Structures are given as structure tokens and as C-alpha cells.
Image (cartoon, rainbow, N blue to C red; front, side):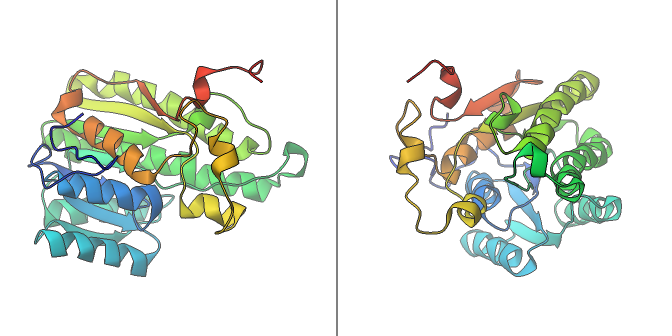
Amino acid sequence: MSAAMTTTPGTVTNGSRLSGKIALITGAAGGQGAAFARRLAAEGARVLVTDVEDAEGKEVAAQLCAHRAGAAAYQRLDVASEEDWTSALERVTEEFGPPNVLVNNAGLLHFSELEHTTLADYERLLRVNQIGTFLGMRAAVAPMTSAGGGSIVNLSSVEGLAGMPNVAAYTATKFAIRGMTKVAALELGGKGIRVNSVHPGMIDTAMIRRFTGEDTDLSPVGGKVALGRVGAPEEIAGLVAFLASDDSSYSTGAEFVADGGATATHALKS
């Protein structure tokens, strides 16, 4: 996607493809969100790192600034809070200028059979995954319009394309993100704002490890897909950087899948 790509998947040397871009990334204190922040900053963007994990988020921002002065700042953001979204948009505008990139990444995962999924657990995922994405897109419209347009990247999942047992609440929110993305793309195209969804497959992150255990061998899961392995956050970061950049200027309302080939098959595969 970029001339700055190196031989290591998902990494770049210092580049300028995103020079002049101002990005707000949710859930950026670790995992995929931190990888997105590192990649966008490495390509020249200035980044507001947001999360509810303050210590980790501040550390990510500090690391980015250590590589390039003024590259990042940290702001606490509970994505289910309208007030926090107002504060975050004010902060990024004051710190860097009106944002022209929003990455709605913050999300929760919950495993439970449908029969045993509590309303409280369902609503917990709904508030962060679905309502958080809705509030983020809504809050970004005015400042992004004032910036002359931009790109909103909503993190869905392969579970936003097809079902999987034991993740009813998660799947519901990820399908919702997919649908909201298309509506927003239709409404905001005239304002110069593009909106796309990203659908990762199994990615080795701390969120997954909380359920599998730190030392669990994920290779049997990776062996089920065409590429024969699970993915790394940096590989999704490359796709997000593409969507944040002007290289994707004619892409909106679309689904971008990075799943090692998981959705290339159907249930009859052995």
C-alpha cells in the first residue's frame, strides 16, 4: 500500500503519506489501537490517543512523542459518554486542529452461549462497541466538515460479516457497525467525509489473550485459515493507514477485510 513498507509486515519507516492528517483513535492504549497510533504517527499524522486506561494511554502518547516531538497527546475517553466525546473533540482541535481522521476502535468481547448471555453483558457491549461508534461518528461530523472533509474508519470484525457461536452480543454490535458505516457514508459523502469499516479476523491481542490465556498456542486457530496463522495488530494498522490516507480517496461505505482468508470459505470446508 505504501512505498514506506519494509520487509517486516505491518511496519514502516518514517514517512509522510499522512503528513497534515490529524487523527483521533479510540481504545488506543494497547492492542490494535496502539498499533494504529504508532502506524499513523510513523506516516506523519498527529494523533490524539484516547482510552480509559490512563497510564497505558499516556505511555503510548509519550512513546510517539519520543520519536517525533508533538506527534501525539493523550485524552481520557469513555466512548459511551457524550460528555467525553465533546471533551475529546475539543482537545484534539485545541492541540492539533480539527481532526480529519477518526478511528473508532474501542471495543469489548464477550463469550457466552445465547441462552446464558445476560442482559447486563449484552448492554455492556452495546454501549461500548455500538453506541461508542455512533457517538464518535456523530461528534466528528462538525469538526471534520470544518477541516474540509476526512476519513472515518470503524472497526467491525469478521463477526460483522457472518456469525460464530458464543458471541451473540459481540456479533450484534459488529453487524450494527457495518450498517451504520454505510448510512454514514451516504449521508456524509457530500461533506467530503468518507466512512469505511474494517473487518479483522483472529488477531493476537491482549483482548483475545484475556480469554485464551497468555501462554495458549493460537496456531490451531490460525491453521484453519488460508494463510495458516493468526494476524498481528500491525497488519491491521497498515489497512487503517491506507483508509486514513488520500490513497483511498474513492473508497467509502465499503467493507475492508483482513482475516487471513477466514471468510473465503463456507461451512462445507473440511
